Length: 226
Ligand code: SF4
Image (cartoon, rainbow, N blue to C red):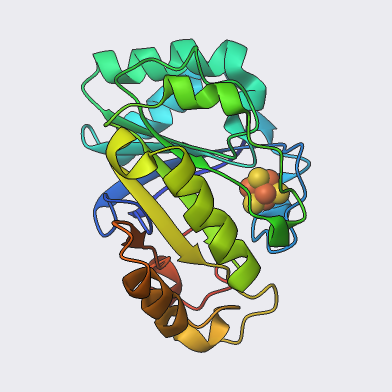
């Protein structure tokens, strides 16, 4: 697999937020979201065998959570799927963070999928692979990164039209983060004020989770590898 980095930190998003987690970040992405904070994953990385990655994961922690992320990890599906199966046999709980653009039907059902649906403001709206809806279960979570009111209305309408609140374990509405964050560890770095987003969610009586990337409130927002 082509790997950017492997490290242990806390999980910043989803219903697992706040828990210690090992991150395996794969190289490469076929999308170019305007607010992407992971452009350093688009090229480069180090070629590692699945056994080498597994060894490094075990060195960092013998048990617990592992998140597979990127870039877009499902671009390396052929090697990634058996790798995830091996980690689960060892007893790890697996999270897969994906853009939603790649087919997900081959992901093992025990993996917790955290699947983006790209909103218009990302510049990658319309890339969600609609057949992925059939692969989602109550184990999975769907995430919308929201930059403005247009994005919010898209996320709200998609959530309602697809019945996501009852279909998956959680729906996350997360304000987009600025491309050029200040060192301040506060909400001023969000493109959309989280208070405004919260008000909209409550006004519309949506049963969704406000998602803040808590690692950006623990470390300086531009810090990598945390
Ligand atoms: S899918 Fe993820 S890694 Fe790829 S461009 Fe969008 S935010 Fe960045």
